Length: 116
Length: 116
Image (cartoon, rainbow over all chains, first blue to last red; front, side, top):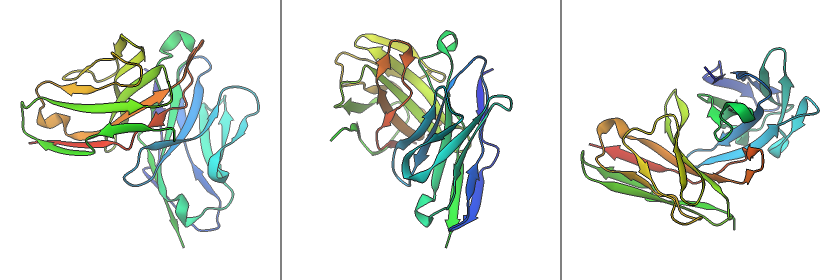
């Protein structure tokens, strides 16, 4: 079955330190990969996506994500965390054309807490 | 301003009392979708629509109905709500490209529904 795993319910990091939020997926073929962020009492906001090309993609608010095909991973990273980055982060996958291309499959979410 | 608008934002109702959650987008997007968000489960797709009069089931469609009579609107109908439909609901929209869903979803602010 197609799925997205975010192995950490919560990630704690000190302000100014680098952060990583992990995501692995189980989808055959070459999917599109996404990260979304949800701030309290708000809808999800698009952060970045990977379709093809360079394995390191850059997105909004200084975030970037690294695609690793052999490990089927798409980890979200930021070199220096801010307290304002504290939010719920979702990894999502759009299966390739032949496998359900009209949906995004979301992970369960990882809560990022950045401490001053 | 580009936005997806959901109403109501909060609703408490009783078992069996029909209700409708409205969703409207002003970006002329072909694709619209409803998700429910539950703790530990991430977002699960209820129904989606690729265009006017074209709708299809997502992963958890039981107990829900939708319609797409106009491009901008995609209401979610609970004919006979039950307590297990207590959840946070999100409407989202996106462009539909030749190869399928672009994946960059625009989300509404969410509708928190409680069924007693």
